[in-house]
Image (cartoon, rainbow, N blue to C red; front, side):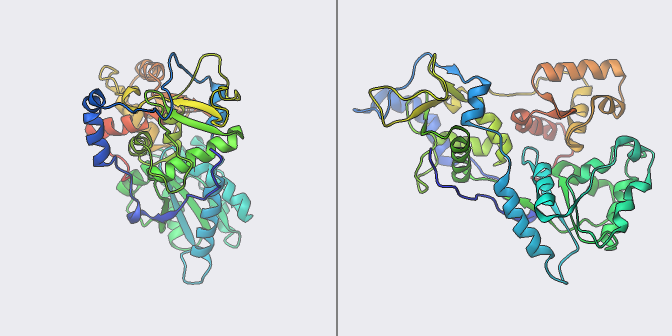
Length: 393
């Protein structure tokens, strides 16, 4: 791609958050595409569609679509924090709300290091359930600025699981905790607002990426990971999916990807990675064909219409929606704790967890069960349809 580095991040008040939508023109276009193609063909194709493609192996995916270290978000948030907390009139604690897949916990951990502020570890589940107020002793050092990456890790949906988070919010509201930044997952925020009659700090959230920003960001990922000229082309027609021109209109694929992922970069990246293909025997470092020496590496992208449609199965049993909901409310849970928080036997919960894992809906990440990023849009839609409390984004 060789795109110019551009910081695409913006932190906005919650009321200003706007998720992208698939444009009407894209919907109409996809509806008539098959008919139109019967009557019109390009005299000179931009690039011949590929045949007999195979999905990229993990090693190649990591080159052309590497995981993010969220550097741009950290830089932008650092400026926002300094602006918000730099005056006597400013609130002493700023909240940063993170959607699933937005990397907020990692961003805030890096922010603490960048600012030189104290990083506060979350209490362990035993401290939460025993209501161990000693965990709050760090709030007594009001002269030391701090960062707590995930407020959602200070509570459990349990009869004894809300004391620590309630006491912490009381100290924040009374300004006893001093200057700080607290992160909170969007699902945890919805739940805590529902069950706790307390005020929450003034909050910001990373603005969703529209299709143009998402395309630029994915191009930057490719540049960082591969270091070579790459062309991402749609497999059925050879058209460029990620234009190199800053002013170019986003492709139909990226428009749909932005809408499907709610503009959340981490969600979009996981879906994107599973759309990437190559010709047989090609590697991420292969040069282009001799007939097109200036085209660089070509990575093929599965057409959006052929991407797997992820639908939560209806035969997973009564424990499945509660388990998925609990994982989202807590931004992930250890396996044993997830079973303890559900009103089902360990055997039934274990069977349900196995089914969700086999389907790819639940995965283990850093010792915790989480909803898979690429399944998140489907799970959210499913839980919303079943009447469960969801986040407000």
